[in-house]
Length: 252
Image (tube, rainbow, N blue to C red; front, side, top):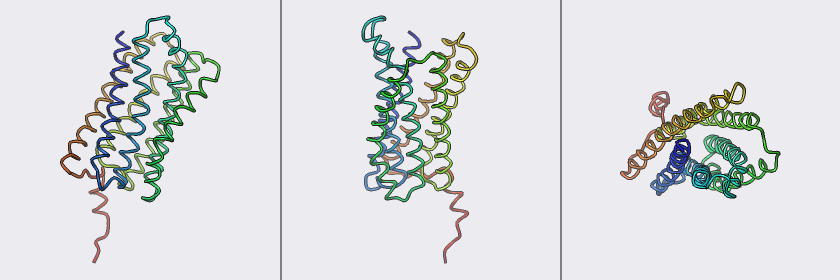
């Protein structure tokens, strides 16, 4: 029961982060086509899709009576749903990287298309995974570890691109860095269970969800702070914007 509560709290925080990211983007008003604003819109699309799916899965699995038809249905679809959300996160990282390295017009097109792309990815990846034979526990954990590792890699590339061209404001950069850390920790736990032993699986998952909940709460706090600043009309600089300004040659 504790694990179910942890799952619900952790996934609800992901959904809340998506809602806050959307509210931040709406606060940009005339600057919504700015690259930093578009990054918030793309982030909102990803975490609304992932957070909604994950929250629905955790709530239904906790509320449904064991061995009921609903519980069996959720149990049968859970591996595919988990892998589907993982693929969505990978696509989000790729879209974010594309947004950051593109010109403004192309970046706006990427952000505008992202909700449909991410939703279609979630459906296609989940259905494709469900059509495959039901995996063993070790095979499933290996697949999930690989997808999660790929998510961390593409997010790292996007964060480096943002440092190079000042494409993200400081608070969104920090929030996504925390998310990358969360995914990296997840890879460690999943790899241990897949390659070594599942003897202490219950303990692993309990620790994983506690760590994930704390890190996701940090993401929510950063988004809430950005929303507060946006409501006051205050601009948030990129992480190394001041340093880059010092290196630019003065005109005239």
